[in-house]
Image 1: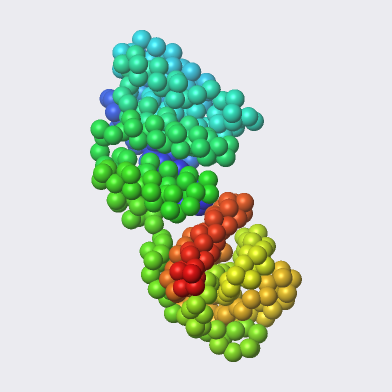
Image 2: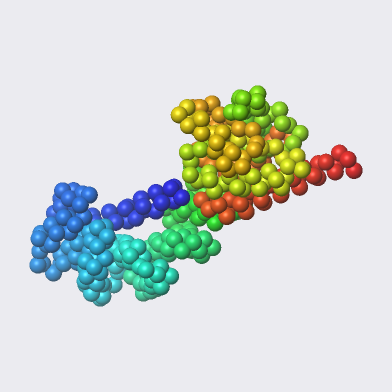
Length: 387
């Protein structure tokens, strides 16, 4: 989710900067004020108010800059006042400027932010679509409106609708540059992950889009090192158990399916995943499932591992080197965050990674699906050996 939030915030900031940079005779003055009051949109808005001229040809320019500053400041009341002024000033314009269109979308995002009921907020896509049908804007801005609608759907946790909006945006941007489509593919990927879709489903979708040159780069950028392990021999993992009962070696377990669980006592999110691990252990132990826990606890918290395992009913072997993220146990597996789960088949080949999602219920569904496939494959191989 952090990646998603980062991409959305950066996109919003870039959009705001677009309309805050003026492109008329007053450009130099507005740019000067913007540079002087960077990071303080309220002071910037007030400075624009003082510096604005009474010349009609500059009225829209200054009003748009002031409206944008209030949007950036998050002041819905002031933003509403000046955005409505911009609407009045542009009523008779044959073509809307990029600054005005960007302002409309950014203002709508602010309205969504302050709304008590996101679902009741009027559609920005319908608003911009009317302008596009009237010939007052390009499909580029209609695509941006679709992305804004997708953001609202994500906040409502309507992932299916968010994907529909991202697809609309991609369709509208198919004639634009590769670079312009890459962020949308990235956002769609994150929405697919948030919805609980499996890696296989995600990979299949992107495979269907492989003719678009924007796909290759964005998948390469967002894919994790752990995902590249699928189909490869499990990396070496040999370390002492924290209970002192000898060495634990994942490769020595070849012949049985293995679940490797990366966690730490200090990671709150692991608390929600622990029950899924114990449930999997109980359900599949009779079919030979072996579980190894890899703790990323540091030296100061190593003493907490034993009590933690007991408190959460975790009875499988756990290894740790006491070095946390500075250690080497997680690195061969490409683990970038915890908790995380990796499934290995009886031949010692990695079959599933990146199972954990932001929502425990989605993680549960992914884990159940991955384990079902793993044991179906295991059973098929047993039947081939013992017909």
